[in-house]
Image (cartoon, rainbow, N blue to C red; front, top):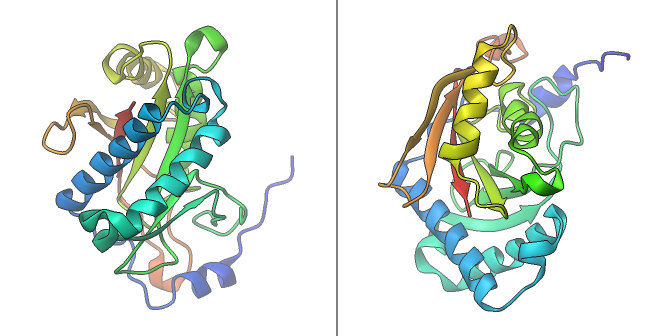
Length: 233
């Protein structure tokens, strides 16, 4: 397979006037984000939307996005923080080799650089139907580690739609431990999930090393680790 070429000019345009990595998002804002996503989910459940429990990932996200955008007009703390929410908004990888990445939900803040929305990557967890935690890691966590997603940020959210009773403790933590024992740990886990009840009753936080380097003379440095906040609904 041919290796895709980097696009330094694209990255230079994207990062013009920006100091990387961006400042870590405040815990107060993380709390608002996690609580509001959870609120949107439970409101949709109460409305009896069947796709939440049986639809594919795109169907669920297509319900969550407009509800979160509606909150941009109705929920005070949310609308003060978030300008808009976009499903599948295209993004570039850290070196521009990939220019059509589509993270599930992009939160554009009311303040800050709108070229770098805060990202929420979503996955269904349903082991009996082949939606396993290995997929959550391979097509979720690994994309953050490799610099495909959220490479300018120090944190992001992994959102799971759980249909089989799984939890971060019962499924994700053991899988990350297993990956760490492998010869090549693609998850690059520095700290395994720990509960963050100060942010959300069920949220957990893990940390992962990122080995890529920013491109360009001004940014030829490493981004440092990324903190992932796991919200399993």
